[in-house]
Picture: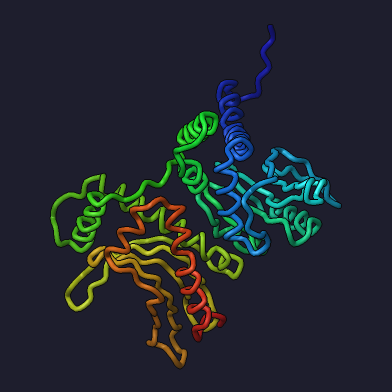
Length: 362
């Protein structure tokens, strides 16, 4: 037997890289099987995406079907749609399936501007009733913000996993598919976002003391896990309600900082969107901010004026909404999909207030 090999190439490394690339395809196939054979998930998925879409009407998911690796011919090229969700109601005069969601699913591979342009061309051919859904590991990608078609919905695999695991009283077939899908997510290092328990919530106080140097003790890894969980949940909330800002030049951010106000320092976790490089301001931002001392979650909006401007030294920040400590705990103590449905209107109202401020468009 003759073995052909390229210089400086290890056969097993090449095979391993090829196998890893199939994880994305296999996970997408598993998602399609879940959609087609688990009625509860199909209903929840359609409602979840439609709630974030300006193009798709709300539906109970009946008559919907998912299919994968769909080749589409455009005027100057051909694209392969990872997952296409169609709607067909023969009894209601819709014998020809209509494309509702066009899903591009990514795990480790990168989305490119050219690929997004091809999808934009395809959506124009489909008309106003088709919605592009980008399903990625981390959600909104700031590098692609200027290239995404308008009204694109960003989803994370974590959100899909939460929807999948949301119901327990299902058929044996649905339970089997659900377990297989969640197991495949975990195999690809995608974990679900657990609710924050009361005992876990106490670690936020420890994180505050550590950040403000009130305590000289070492901070245990469990506290960082809780903080990371909070940031992930806040990121999902921000993307869910404010991802449209990405097409207006805003970029996602997440950080923690210490404020020393009247000799009473406190640590803040902030997750949201900011727009850099404006003509009159350094940046503008809207964010979810958690005060780790008071344990209150707030929606903040603000901007920072550039030196030399008439309003210099008049940096503006406004509380657009604030939850009580109990409401904040309840928000993080419930499944993410329930929290999103309950608080989306609050975040949307906050964004509208922010857009009416003096320096939003300058």
